[in-house]
Structure formats: C-alpha cells, structure tokens
Length: 623
Ligand SMILES: [Zn+2]
Image (cartoon, rainbow, N blue to C red; front, side, top):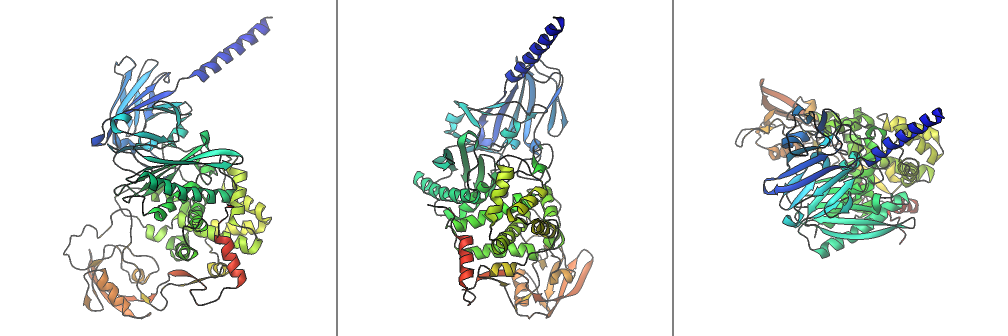
C-alpha cells in the first residue's frame, strides 16, 4: 500500500508540475507610438512567472535570412525594469545588447524606447505613415524563455489610421500572438493604411488563403490588378512542387511596401514575406516588381521548409553560417527568374540576358574561379548586409551564392533535361517531399542522395556534387545552351578592353573622399586577371595620363581604350602615396559572354532544339 501510495503521489506531483508548465502565462509585449514623428516607439514587456533569480533580457544580433551580424541593441534606450507595482528593479547593462534584471518579484516589467528609421526586410521604421516592424530589430527577449508563448498588443492604430498585416495569430482586437520566440522572430508586422487583395488557392482539396497587402500610393483597382498577376505567379510556383506548403492558420501574406525612399529588399518567412520597393507606385511598374515576389515566394518551400540544418534553429545572438546558400538562395534565384518566363511576364528573348548574367558570374569572376559554392555560401556572414567602414576585397575573392548557385541550378536543369529526360522540377519535388514537407532539416549529402534517387544514378550525383558543389569545375554552358537553340558567345568580340576601374558596392572606398576639381581619375577597384590588375594599378591610385593624354574622368580613359586594338599597349602615368609612377596596360578582349537565340544569331534551330526550349520555358500550369 505504501509503495502504491508513494507512486500515486509521485504521479500526482508530475501531473501538477506538467499542468503548471502548460498554464505558464504568455510574455506580453505592448507597443505604442506617442512619438512616431521622431521615429520612436515605446515598448513594455510584461514577464509573468519570470525566471527566479537574476535573468537576462536582450536585443538580437542577427536576423534570419540576413546573414551578417546586426547591432540591434544600438537603437534602444531608456531601458528600465520594475515590479508589477511600479517599484524599480536593479538593471545592469552587461553587454551592448544584454541587460540583467536583479532580484525581483514574480512578474517583471521591462520598458524601453526603440528608434527605427530604415524600411527594409531586416530593420524597423517608425513614422506617422507606418510602423514597419521586423521583429529582431524591434523586440527584446528573455534568455532561456524562448519556448514560451508571446502576445503583442499594437496600440495607437486609430490615432494613425493603421491596420495590422502580419502572419502572427490574431487573438482579437489589437492583440496577436506567436507560439514561441522563433515564430515571433519570423513574423514581420506592418502597421499602416495598406490596401489589400486576397484570394484562395485549392491545395490538395483544401483552401489556402493568399493575401497581398501593399502600403503605397496606389488605388484599390491597381492593387487588385496586380493581385491577379501575383496570383498567376503563385500557381506557376505551385506547379514546380506540385502543391503549396500547408501554411500555418491556412494563410500566406505578401507584405509589400512601396515608396521612393525605402530600401529595395525582400525577406522570406514561413507564411509571409516582407518586400520593400523603392519606387513611387505599383501602377506602371508591375512587371519590374514581380521579380522579388517570385523569389521570396519560392522561399516558402526552399529555405523556410526545405531547411538547412545549419540554420535550424536560428541563433539570434550571433551570425548563423551555412554552406548551403548556393542551394537555398541560388536555386531560388534561378527559379525566381525562370518562373517569370514560364508565367509569361518575361519573354524567352529577355531571359537570355538573365542567363548571360548567371554564366558571367560563374565563369568570369575571380571568386568562382578559385572557390567552391559552399565556401562562397559561408561568406554570407560578411557579405549579406555586413557593415563596416574599412573596404573588403570581395571583387577578387567573393562571388555571390545567389548567382553562383543560380548558374549551378541552370546547368543541372539542362543536364537533367538532356541526359535523363528529367527536369530540375523533378529534383525540387523530391527534395520537397523528402525534406521540406516533413520538416527534416538537410545537409548537403541529403541533396546529393536526392539527386541520386531522382536520376537513379548515384555516380552522376556524386560526380556533380564533387565537381561543381564541393569543387570549382564548371559545366559546359555553351554545349548545354545549344540544346535549347541558344548561343553562348563573347559579348564584345574583337574589342579592346582594360577591365573595370570602378564598380558598385555598398559602402565607401578609396577615392570616394576626393572632392571635385582634383586632377586625374581615381581607380576604385582592380579585378584580378584584368589588364589593369596585371599592370599593377590598384584602388587608390590616381590615373593622370594615358597614352600621353591628360585624363580627367572615366570617359576620357574609355575613349582611349576604345580607339585601340586587342594586344595594343597604353602607357599610363599615375600617382599614389609613394609618388608618381608609370606602367603599361596591355589590352585584351573583354571576356564577358552574352546569350542569344539561334534565330538572332542567324542560325535555324532544329525541331529538337525548339521543343527543348519550349518545354523548359513554357507554363506548367494547367488552366
Ligand atoms: Zn532569397
């Protein structure tokens, strides 16, 4: 009896503690905007059943999908901790973005002011037109409490005429919730007077609702018409995988923000995407805008559900490194552009420029020549919105995993079509069923085994991964494109070329500090393998003369090069910190490729080539 009694008591105790855990109250965030005109929000976090003893509450240092570190802690201040009765608690800032709350009662309140003035897919912007909230940039979180439910109360909506667009669950009135911290971080929220267009898609006999919310100066008719185009795109994407993901709460939301001063961006989430486009209106720009929609929506399969193990769960305290972004981003890049052709928004003719862009990246950049796609993926922790004031050498050691991976996807698609009578869609569907649909995070070896499975040829899969994913060999793009009646050829055959002296980059660089009126042409970049690089010119050098003529700007230099032939020499006089110098540039042919149709090149494609091209680029939607 005693024994039984003890056992029963133990079970009772276990049940009680389980029930208590179940009953743990949500952490409650209240956000208000008394000073939106100066880009501030006031946030109060109420933490019931706070961890006993001192605990840490912090801002994030990273944001899922934007791989560099971000010091979100820099934009919060007036941080205070109190008991529920308002009595002050001891609060220590122990790191830039981490605060420690001292001895406290059961419920703790932490309040702070948040500044935000940057509208994109990572940061937060607060002004009277909207509160554009990306969660890692907005909300502090309690260390060790990431499994708890979180609730959000969005205040001042009537004051500004705002509505709430988000993938968070609507609990009623202005209160929304997330089951845990990871989900909250994935749920950007737009408070504004946005316009909306919604529709349903039949998915395996169930209705899924797709919402398009756009904060812009367009009228409702424009948004509805654009919604029809997005609807078309959604069906084309669904056709690749054969089904939509089962979206949480049965809904997916495109959160679009269109205004000339916002930052161009797109960020994927499980059941939504945050798209930000720096133009005046949607109306008149629809086709231009669709590219970001196409890419981000594809992510609702590839990366949000077909998930690399390296990113799961996402760590918000430091950069999350992944060797798989050539697939997660690169294959998404390939499909984002391809599906615009399949859906009829771009012509095959227009698509040849996209193809040339991918191929030039993989064949003509120093990064792709030296390093594999896996290594370039890992560099994302520095390249993806990484901010620092010193220059980097990306022009000579980095090729974006977007285009590198996109070019690999292109080659694999064409090889599956020509060697196996399969398509990349078949491969993506296999990866979806084996990894994404069942939410089993993958490693690269899993992708290889899925390729072996779909081709029934493990030797081909091993060879492809060893050469083009882990290795730096390149596929034969000219031969592959010829299958589709496309020609890969030099873009400027027979024309003399010295290499670029400048290129677009995110941040400042040598030469930028110069003021107008200074003599010469500053070199901003020197790319390995170009005649300029071989001549010893580098960033920071000032070109004074070329071929004996004074050089004042890039145009003057380019005119001299254009008048020469391949193999000609140009004597260049330049200066830098070590004085005046002279060097000789030996001109070469520009290595850049272009892709043109057989028709445009004056050749007649065979029926096989025409069929191959049509099967590849035509719609897969059965209307
Ligand atoms: Zn992406």
